[in-house]
Length: 527
Image (cartoon, rainbow, N blue to C red):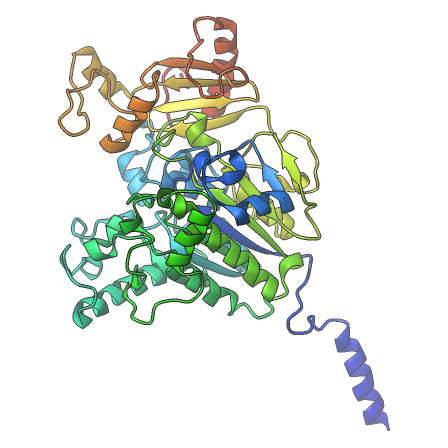
């Protein structure tokens, strides 16, 4: 009798501390799925007026929160992704490649050399430490830049042992490709991810094989489903980073919808995939909606987003999961590698049934540096004491709080810095002393292909991107630029000479921002 009573008391006592039944989750520890597209401009979203068919993204904007004035603080892949995953400006990076290019005391040239640090906190590391199951699928471009061009590094294990024309169907070649992919997965796990698969170390061309230089969203979504099927009852964070809409140009169908769907980032996979509508069906539905085949790539990505939303619903996790969608920056056709809004300002969509009311919009300045602190905030995770954020949580915006998060946002890209307010943007271009000396001597700087030498260098090292950015923006090289974002949202008319008082006011704000970067000079702003 005493033994029975003891057993009953033990069951009653443990019942109050045991975890929820399998399949249930603590709603105070929600899941987060972050979908990050690549090089995606406004004209590839139907809900932004693009001449494309994107029904799922259009619906996502209606069913959740649309951040209309969301911004990335750097407009190329690596630094933008760094800021999303750390909550820090890319100019604070301490990765090996970045520090080699920019030793302490040097002016930084923020671009595709930023990377997550092994010895510093990031969002995934913190969530993992706090019991979250963390996953990464898709394009990285934020770790091991020394591996991205393996023929130039000293790591024999990561050197590519196949030719640019090698056939991935060859069993020996395919084995090498799978082993190479697995090494990338194992490496990315070190940065706080429990599950890593379907990885591209950088862009498709960095697979160093013509046959693999094609988009394969089916492969990316297949790996995403593999993660979601493995979560059990653990709270999770998943980053899904697509290669769309980066080059090779996905609107040329041989690079995308007409490519062999079995060619993947881990080589040739003969079984193929069955997680998305067929590519012929994508083209068919795109035509039926009244669009040309060149626009079907947008519907393809849209299908991928829809498949993730549907899978979360199928698992019964919609009300416990916030799904976030955002591009890493605008496309090179507009504002990539510049600090103009066509590059900086991108849509962010947040879907969370039962928590975020349908049809919400926010017009305040929010940025990629705010993503990591927001996720930690909604997940009830306290950042470590030595974690430094530049961003702030926009959790209140999820509840339709219109309170501005900030008055001023800093942007950094190459030799340029900017401050943006709701009404104005001021852009300053300042070159390091060595480049200034060359300019003073009349040195001609390298141009793209066989174009004539330049009096001033492009803002970034990438001549291809610099060429198109300069060609698309008439004030690209202007030292001081001021734009009225209300009357001139395309930032065509530099009116710095008309409003010296506004320029001076914004210069002071820029100086205040830049002085936070100890040992990183930028002209007179940090003197």
